[in-house]
Picture 1 (tube, helix red, strand yellow):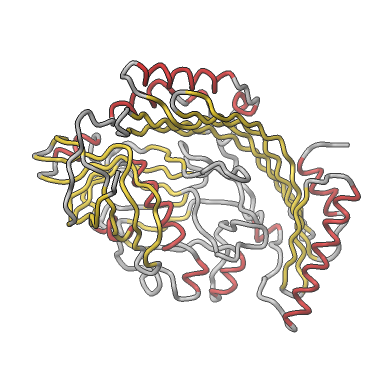
Picture 2 (spheres, helix red, strand yellow; picture 1 turned 180 degrees about the vertical axis):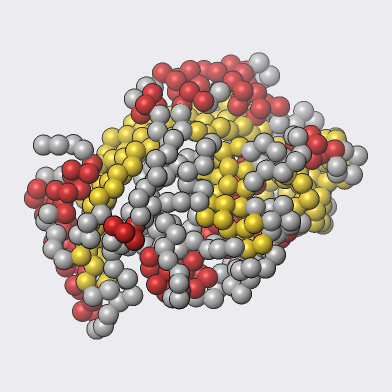
Amino acid sequence: MSTDPLDLADRALAFTDGDAQVTVTRERSLLSRFARSTPTQATAVDDTSVSVLVVRDGHVGTVETNDLSDDGLRAAAARARDAARAAADAAGGPGEHPGLPTVAQAGTPSAHAGFDAATADLDPAPGGAALAAAFAATAEHGLEAFGIWTTGRVETAIASSAGLRVADDVTDAYLKVIARDAHGRSGWGAAAGVAAETLDADAVTRQAVARVATSDPVALAPGAYEVVLEPDAVGSLLDMLGGLAFDGLAHAEGRGALTDRLGTPVAATGVTLVDDPLAAGGLPRAFDADGVAKAPLTLLHDGVAQAVAHDRRSAARAGGDAASTGHALAPGGSPWGAAPTNLVLHGGTAPDVGALIAGVERGLYVTRLWYLNVVHERSTTLTGTTRDGTFLIEDGRLTKPVRDVRFTDAALGILERTSALTTATSLVCEADFYGRRAAHGCVVPALRASGFRVTGQTTG
């Protein structure tokens, strides 16, 4: 029996009747965690799952299984059919699902550079070498290393009763290192990419080591500060902003941050944000969870809001000429709407982070942000803390380590007050690698902005 995911999708689809979509996901991955310069966990995943979606009178039923026998697939199809029928009966009328995309509506997926054959082989040796390099580089400075190394391959295939048959095959790799001293002072380094060989563990670790404060941090009073955000901090902001400002469902329901603001300036001139699933240097994807082909979507151009992301369900809710932009997060569309997952913030003209710092008389340098939460969805206000490398900027240079601070500020507001961006960009991975593997990330520069609102200090 064939083990090809698309063949498996076809086999499962044969057990359905009416409008149905089958999605096959095969993940093979390795992950190693480490703490105090000691390996603490090593996992290997080799799993194939089949999701069956059935649509009845605008209502959906979804069942997932990893029982790949004919009996298992037949049972999953029957349960999905019964679930859709029960939803239709309970509603007593038509649902709002617009139906499965036709081949013409889905479009043709583009080729991309998101697969690396060597990484797909899942050799554990590079992981061992990465951990050894991290332990050695931190030990040179009397520090300890904490973090993860992981690589994975994810194959996805979709077949539907509407005639859709598409398949994608991607790889990804990620390394993060937190270097920490005996006083709890820490520094951050991370790298991500399609290929495991691009992760330079020694360089990542030395970056983390360089961000560990060598003296006691000073306290910073609440207030508004000029800030320089490293790419990891920018990526965290944009990852949150993607769901707040560009969710087509929230926009259609009038609760999105860009409601009545499309076509108007919402960020500084020079801020151009694109969701580009095919971008070089990112983590490319061919199609969304509905099988709709992915393509670049400009969200902000020179600070002006251009578009929001839709799946088929949110586009139907929006009406008019709205159509899916290829951003379904789950088969049939997520109940939480659609969101961009391949954000690219275009770089500016600053040659490096040092040039950003040189332009600040007194301000804050932030390596990364942590534990972000939404305070107010419509205004994109977030709160969180700085972490693993926060420093005071005085007269254009880093002078003192700063005790980590809590900030409360609007993500769009920070983009509105952005005054400079570095030319170079970095891939910042936002996946947590818990649950099903779905690595995603932002390609971003470092940025400088005014008025960054510090609202408190951490106790650490």
